[in-house]
Image (cartoon, rainbow, N blue to C red):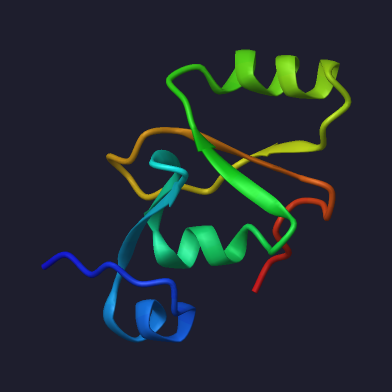
Length: 88
């Protein structure tokens, strides 16, 4: 099923995976729980080369951390200024 909504409560109640579009471009995708765990000040970026992404982002002054991903999901980094996800 595909749901198109700008209402976060509706998305949280009905979806396990999401894709976020901005101006017609995909800006984030993955498990809803992973995206929410990244915090409001961050962005989850899927990449085939996490080490290169971390070096590049950190070299540009961004705070970046390796994202926790489920087996089989593409590796990703979390980019933001609020630090790594805290253990729950």
